[in-house]
Length: 256
Length: 98
Image (cartoon, rainbow over all chains, first blue to last red; front, side):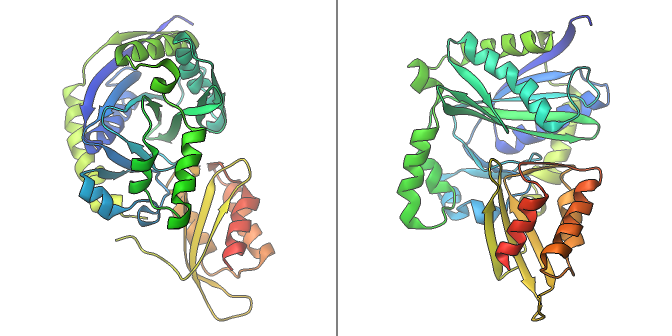
């Protein structure tokens, strides 16, 4: 098969609501054939907690603390766990393709293996000893550096995930609920032990270099060529619509 | 605000998988019958909205292992992909709450 042309979007820092709405808007436009298959990189401003589609918001998130610290709270379209997206400490990616895209397995678990392979290849290009750890994690030197989540809907596949640049477990656990206060310190220590970051592994974080490596990783495993593009007017209009209907709507956020 | 079907609840972490959190109200019968149910957690289900079908399917069912397993299995046999938990994990989580 000939090399496929994909669009690369670099949308910088946006709010959680705009970020999640744009992921959905791009997916819908890709499925409709109005946009090419897309790989996007972005950041979060202000910091936000996202929870998985199936999670109970009050079970997982200390809503008062988030309000106090100016941290937005959002429910994702994808399953998986609660994530603290700290401004400046994470590079997030999303990938949107039609669900019949050649070579992407129908089985979700298998498709994580394939798509996370692009990130593994990217981390290796940065000189890091990365591996995919099922179900949906990527480890460097045995510690988690990336979590990923996927949804399949509207006739497409959306996978998004985190590339951790810095970790701040005490702040993270001040925003997330813990089963009881006595084990808070233990949980923090556990994350310090099991989770790593690009800064810890490389001593420094060069966002542009990380994104370039990840693009090369995806290009390698998917046999694609990425061209820098822009968000279309149609996607911008859809962003506003799904933000209002879903991501910035308490009925959605508090539905479970 | 999210509904919190309580007061019976349990958390169960699937081995090598994800966390299932079950909250429910049940009748006084023996075995008790599920009146309202919410299953939350960090698992994956495709399509996502199917979780509501599963909760619906289990409402009115006795907290009896065979009855629960039959319903959960029937759900898994439909056109749904669950990642991070299997039939046994859901049954175990439900019984743990009982």
